[in-house]
Image (cartoon, rainbow, N blue to C red; front, side, top):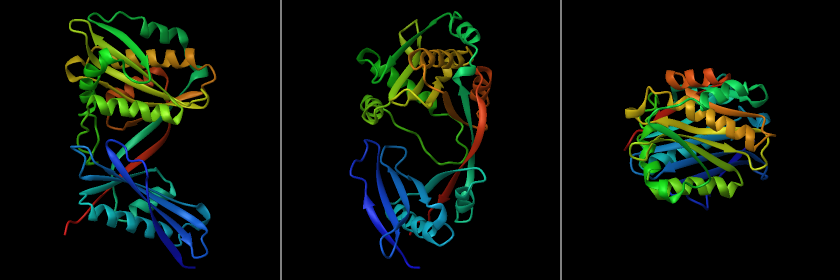
Length: 296
């Protein structure tokens, strides 16, 4: 049965990327799969594209995935991209598909979940109530307050040396507009963004932060967006301190929330240790793949 690939365009580019899309369908118009290609546009990442391919289970192994992949990879090359990355759950059909189509595994991540009903609230309070000489915690919902915007933006470099294997993801360039744009995207979805930060009391600068996104109806699982501590402030327990405070906030503000989910690179020992100490339980592994493109 013949397949048709129809190119689409995402009508809403973000400040740091734009997307292309393709729909695979049978000749009579029945859709069987789709592909989305994110083309990063920010400095430090404009060499990279990120691919997401989905084919309906009953339509797999009939060529739709390969056609969608070819269209996306060709578009990435035409746009001057150096590499394409994609993720798949370990052992899944997507995992095998990427490995069989020119992608190589470059990073393994462990997905872990904290069931909030099982949290030891006493132990959690003991962590958050510990005195951290020279630091204090601040927190906000949604967009960063104006008086913290500059220092919060500067603190984003805490993520620059996060273990990323050979993903070739480059360096994300942050400014205040981009920080606010991320918060606005979450708000437009109807979800809740909560941030906890550790402030250096000697100068009022932010030494580290952790971000959590909770579904708009306050049910299901929340998702940790990232936790980072600036290199000059590491080794003081700030990551565990901030994340514990974020968990307490989630429990207090969203009593119907079932759990919190995070993913961490397998070689990021410090963050994995924090998650384990706070009660997160591994649930699955995700593999990040990379395909290098030949420039003509």
